[in-house]
Length: 114
Length: 114
Image (tube, rainbow over all chains, first blue to last red; front, side):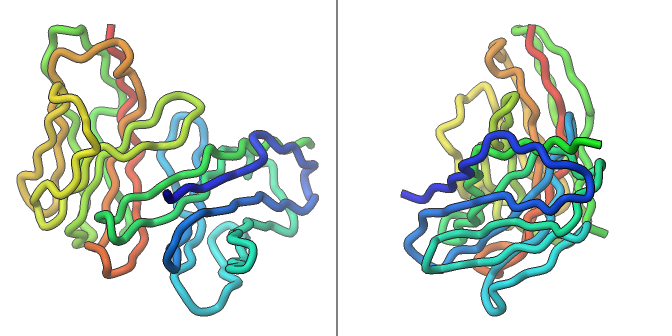
C-alpha cells in the first residue's frame, strides 16, 4: 500500500540555521511527490513538486528538495531558516491512477528560535 | 492566478441543521477535491470530481453530499452532522490525471458541530 512517512514530528531550529525535513514514501510506480506548508488555521500552500527529470527541485521561499529513488526519500531543505518559516510541513504522494488523490505524511511541525 | 476560494471561513451548526460549503476556482482545472483535516492530523481525501462527475467517494457517510454544478464550483452539503465531524474542510483542484499537475488548496472552512 502507498504510504508516506515523516519521521520527525517536531523540529526546532535557530533562525539562520539550515533545515532538513525528512520524507520517505512507499509506492510501486514512479511517484509524484510534493511538499506543502500549512500555517495555523490556514490551507496548504504548495512549496515544490517532483514529477520527473532533475532530482533536485527548487521551490518557493528558498526551499529545495532532492528525490532519491534508491532511498525512497524526498527530503526538504533550506539553507537559512527565517522566523516566518515556522509552520507545519507535509510531504505527499500523488496517486494519479486514483484520480489524483494525495496521500500525506503525518507532518512535521517546525519551530524557529530567535 | 492559483487561487481556490472557500466560503464560509467558519461555520457553527447544530446536529439537525443543513448547511453548505462552497468552493470556487478559475484555473481551468477539471478535477476538484474535498479533504477533511482534523486537528494535528494530515488532510484525508473525501471526494474527487473529474469533469464534473463524482469519480471517487472514500466511503464518506451520506450526511456529506458533494455537488459540482459546473467546472469552477464545488459544494459540500451537510446534514445531520455529528460532533466528531468538526474539522477543517479543504477544497482543492488540479488538472485531471494523468495530466500531471499541482494540486492547489483553498484556505478551508473550519466547521464546529454542536
